[in-house]
Image 1 (cartoon, rainbow, N blue to C red):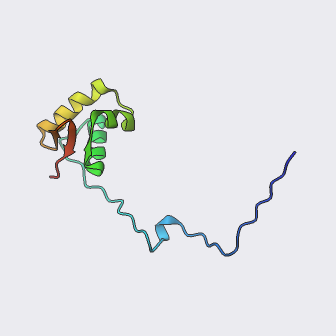
Image 2 (image 1 turned 90 degrees about the horizontal axis):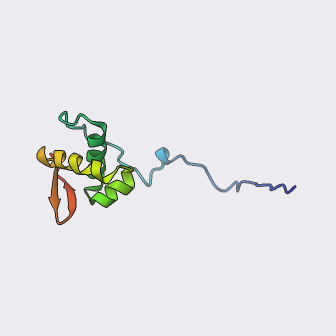
Image 3 (image 1 turned 90 degrees about the vertical axis):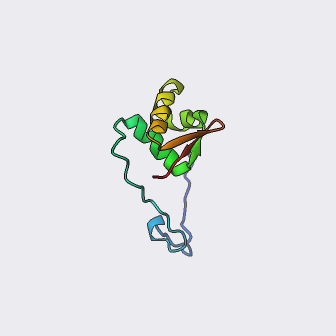
Length: 95
């Protein structure tokens, strides 16, 4: 049996990320449009609102959704004017 001893360096201070003065992250998310009712539509909308652009392949791989499911969701978002298709990319349209 091998026992590993770890001794923390006393020169290092533990600072939780939320208390760091150097890197303040903006975790705010705009409210979802009330016209979005399905969880899948909300998920795709949130992804595109944060990334600003994405392909069907990126959405599929990142969100774990099937391609056949993504097309109607993206079509619905385009009908609402929340997303626009440009050269194979789906681009978020801020409201």
